[in-house]
Image (cartoon, rainbow, N blue to C red; front, side, top):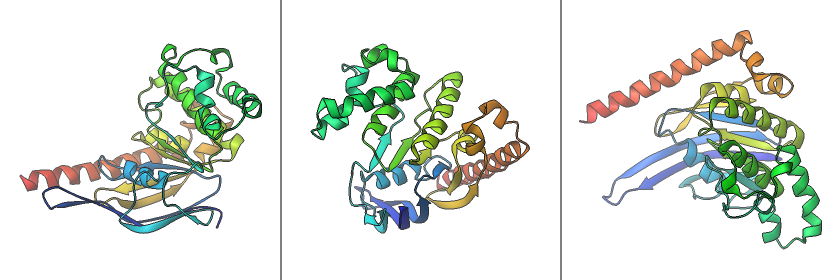
Length: 268
C-alpha cells in the first residue's frame, strides 16, 4: 500500500534491576500518503517513543511497520525528523545547513543549490542564507530545520514538539507555515505535541494516546487543518466545533493525568 502502516506495535524497555516498562502496546495505525496526523496524550504515554520507532531510531519489541509497502527496519532518508530544537550545525550558514543532506548524498552543488534557495524562500529565510545559525532566533532556526528536512525529499516528516519552545506569536506563525508546507508539498506528517489547540489546528487526523502502556485511546478526523491553510488561525479557533473538541479532549487528558497521579499515590 502507499503510505505508512503500523500494525500491533509494542515496545518494552528492560530495566537493569530485572524489571520492565511496557511503553507501547498493540498500536495500530494506517496513514495515507499526504495525511497530517497530530498525536496527543498525557506525559509518559509513549508519544515520542512511537515517533522514534517510526524514524527507525528504536527497534520495537513487537509488531511491524511498512512505508509504501517496504518494511521499516532502521533510519532512512524516506523519513525526516524535525526535533524540538533544530539540531542544527550552529557554526554553519543557513544555506549550508539546508544543503547538508544533498551534500552527504554526493550531489553536486549545481544540482541542489537552486532547490535549496527555493526552500529558503518558501520558509522566509532567503535574506538570511549566509547567516550562521547562532545568529538566528528560535523561530528562524526551526524554519531552517524544516527546510533542511524537505531538502532530503522524505516521504514522511516526523515532528517531535517542534514548536514547543517558541513564544506564542512565533508559534502561531510557524503553525501557519507547517500547514502551508503540508499543502504545497503533499508530505505525510506526524506531529507530536502537548498543546491541545495545536493538535486541533494542525491535525487533519488526531489521536489521543492512553497512559502507559501507550495505546490509541481515541481518534478524530477534523476540518481545522484544511480551513487553516487559507485562513487566519485565530479565525479558525472561532469555529463552533473547535471549542467543543478542545474541551472534550482537555477533559479526556485531564482524567488520564488524574488516573496516573492516583496510581502514583497508591504505589507509595
